[in-house]
Amino acid sequence: MSTKSTPPKEPEHTFESAVERLEAIVDAMESDKMPLEELLVRYEEGVKLVKTCQEKLESAEKRIEIITRNAAGKPQTAPFDPAAAPPAPPKAAAKKPEDSDEVSLF
Image (cartoon, rainbow, N blue to C red; front, side, top):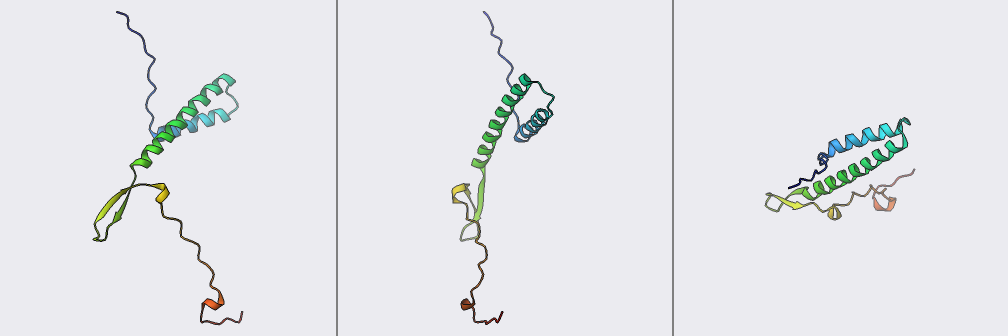
């Protein structure tokens, strides 16, 4: 019976450790002291880390719940839906003179 040797699995990064490693890669690549082959290897590693970060952010977004209160004042939860997020409040519009009873000479 022959046993195949499998390559070691890359360690699972947390979001924070992936971002930290990405920052280290960028710093090293910007130093201008890295040979081209090493730059390519680090670039590939960076692309994998970016994908990991995106997947973790998507997973976190799915887990977010907005806590609201129902009419009885009891907390209730609803799944996060970025499309249903409330729009930003409009900027205060300047009042026109005819909208007010006050008269201004200036």
